[in-house]
View 1 (cartoon, each protein chain N blue to C red):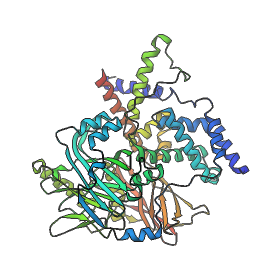
View 2: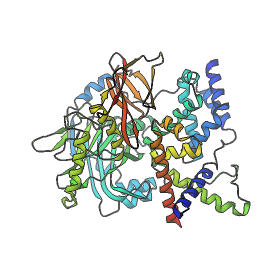
View 3: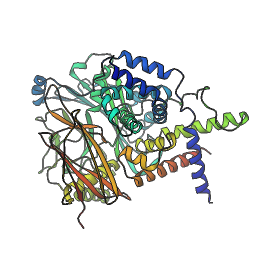
Length: 397
Length: 171
């Protein structure tokens, strides 16, 4: 057995024993939890973003109030945040020569987004390892009007802010729904006084530096088509003042000499392949999880329904709907739950695998892949009358 | 408290508690976080106790709920505790197999391996926790994570390779 295999075998054994060390509950845990659950007579409500209808109507007319150094002093700088977090790797990252400190703030509707700094690194600050691609990091502070002046954000509101803001690098000349690099991993959320701090990690996209780079921020969990305006003539991207949420766009003064036209061309070609620029909003591009998501979208766009596999499912009285299928010897199952938002009356469906709520009509493909290649999927739709329909789709021969 | 709720609480803590806790501890950075995750999972299940009653495999149903709770926590609070050192291993916990004279060294090495596993990206960490912490099969993990078995295998391989590389750097 060679040295590599021997090491791998050792790691396997070490892992087995490492996980055995403290897998037994502490004495009395069951009793403590039992008591706590018995005392909590009312089940805890699901944390979700709720907004009174009247406020939502006002928010529909999002007003871009200011761009610049507004209230900049109230936010931590990136390095200060790292110190507050006692996160030495992050502190080191934001002391490097590639750091661009911007400390610019934009107020949109009830939100203020403040871009503190961006930087790039060959190393992954999360694992301290280097991978097959570079990383791009951004620190954004977010506040909401109703939380201003608080020493600490209440947990519920902090959770809402953290879960409902998306940060994405954008490229001038490329439609936001065509080429973007939304953070594939939010590596840190931190409430500090009245701001939530978000550090995102995404694929290094400075290969586009000669075209012009932006950082887009919007409420919602994905890059929304209507969050940004794209000028097809000039290629410029701006926040959409009519967006029914809040969004902001920051220009990044990145050195154009970092451009790598060949790498940029490959990325655009990949985007063209998986996301034809038909103006339809889609999920993020460039990073690895996006590739997984892109398989679903690829099947959605090119898949061919298998005759006779269409099924209509009825949600049970508790609002859950379970889909299971076996095709070509492989299984797929997915559970969907739905709910009605109290304030807006919108019907929402839960994608359990992603943990996200989406408004109906709902349309997605659950894919099955073999050796990292999509082989077939199930096209699931949920209509406004809560009709759940599914049919198997395969790639064309 | 109605009888159904009381029965579910009792069943959850007595029948499924140890297994569920083991999963929570496998996923969490610390015992404190594991206990929070354990309680959050039970609270979530109690919102819809009928789903547990109707589940074909109640233990797997609970694991799926715990995984979703963990994923949600990771998204919201990821990395917050990573900078904190691993807590000292509890003296009340089971001892590893070697004799006392080797104990300290072995425990340090295992704690280091566990810390490296905890520092893996989430998409690798979950399969590792389920495979080594829960001793589930690749097929069972795939079903829980809604991923093909081949993907689970490749993620486990990648995780082992990353840990191996980190250990090699330590030498």
